[in-house]
Amino acid sequence: MFRKKNILFVNCILFASCFLLCCNNKPEQKSVRKSIDYIRAIPGINDSIPAEVAEKGKVLIAYSDCYTCHKLKERSVGPAFNDIAKRYPVKKVYIEMLAQKVIMGGSRSWGYPIMTPHPKLSIEEARIMVSYIMSMKK
Image (cartoon, rainbow, N blue to C red; front, top):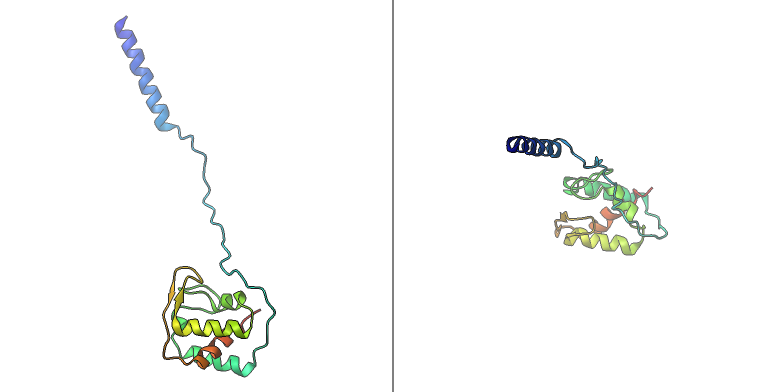
């Protein structure tokens, strides 16, 4: 009788351990990645940018190191130029602020990447470059 109880007990333990190991009762989790809008557009009415200023800015950017970290339409190390244009209204105050940021460098406006300073640029060149970027606004 003692032996039958031991066999029954061992079988119950084996069954319980197999059940616990084989049965996975966790609900299936779908890995859905939520799209985060990182632009956070600033509302405002846009001023116009003269075509010759935008064209000159395009040339200045082509000769600079901007395309090392930025692309026109997609995020790279830094934000895309189109996204920068979407965020800021075309106003003199924002052009001035962004020109200062190009010269001084900065971080945390678009996440963790750090923009290196460009102290050799004049403020006027930086304004023209920023004006070109802002002219991409759709």
